Length: 160
Image (cartoon, rainbow, N blue to C red; front, side):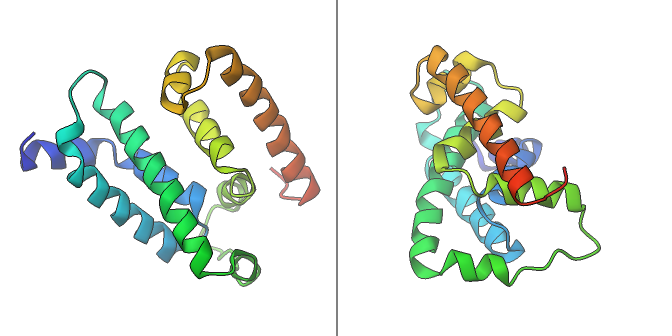
């Protein structure tokens, strides 16, 4: 794939990368750093894209794997809890969306990936392939994750 085509595809699917960045980090600078890291990994691994799946599916895989590895590295470098306490939601942000992302950040890495693909509208069999799960396991985990997310929202008075 040529650089021009790559950039066109990235521009078209930018939203995927933005959403994943927001799901894994609350601080805008961390989101931007993860966004850049995902772009770098996509560019480095573009030769592995064999056109056997949609480009967006390939982006999901690379972006989620990058987010998981990157967040592990970042967590080791920072104390996540103190960072969360120091964050204030500014009046310029949509509080409901930020509250949702805050709740999602409390899920484990697989649950984050699952809920992301679920809200993106991916079919269960595609989610199963991306996460290496069976379709029935995806259904069970999706229901459990949605329930867990509701509990987190209620327990923290996020008011969604």
